Image (cartoon, rainbow, N blue to C red; front, side, top):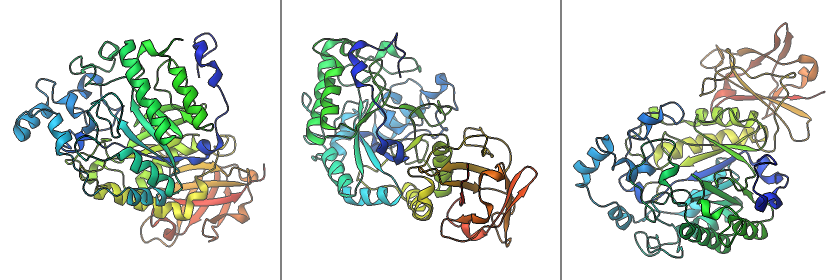
Length: 465
């Protein structure tokens, strides 16, 4: 949150405890779907946070940034666009977008099966195209392209599936309303609209989303127009008043600039060191948020990889917002669907080690094994959570020598204070006993290989103190 000397006074009234539903949810699904899903092309160079910004924008792996990347002279995306589409205007993709295979209930069922508790689709990305009948613009999916209220369909299906619903809205960039040319650098404050006219436009959009869909999450991106931050007729605080009136237990992320937030965000490997307070890591199943047809299995998380990423985040007190990028027709691509289905198989058995859990004090147990960002001590991959009532400790284990393959038993030693748990009560979450022995450097588990069929094994132990 803001310090007392930097927080704008207009937003002080929104400070409140984090709603329990959000802190307990642990997993949400992000959806990036737009006109960019028609070309569906980007260079799969790697994850954000692993490349220098001056290389990133020219070779951007985010397919949803296609309109920006094709305008960078000499970029491979520009060359691809000329060769494949003859340099066609970007809006041709809006008119070619049909969403003919879109089934919102099928999506929601998949997300619920994966163990998600909330869904956040893009309602307007940086290209300025709105996925509902937004006021003040003809560039919507109701007037063109799919000719459907996609936001409304996703909201209704999500709630039918028992999921909370949120809205992503790009407030800082809109290349239709204010185009300052292609963005080449990470710091681009001089390329976002700051004026009162755009503040009115953006405020009207978010107020319309609140009125029509009553979202539980407001997820902003890239900032907010400066003219809409201070007290006055365009103040974003008026939008927040409407939001919290419609959703008293709603939450707001930290990308609306110097206004208000309930939780912080990181993206792929950028900012993954967040641990204090409420926070959320977002990333795609692949390297792109939007669908990228040139990504292959080597660019995607599989189910076990998604579990490891999820548990690294959850064990450190965060939520994971895992993104899918549907095809232009509305189909969840096979590699993304397979990841979510495998994640769902794992969550069906081990979800109690995820939902409603809390972190574990390092004096009791320590993680080991590298996270995808390279953090973590050497050794078998282990992450820890604790049940909300404090009665149970969960060890999530993967990658130890002998823990996969044909060995009759997988043996691994973890950094755990043996006296803090009842070792005789160690078991998998299906009730299978797990032999556990105190050793000089922690506790040794003997995990049946069958526990690693669909991802990391989870051992539960009664917690003493």
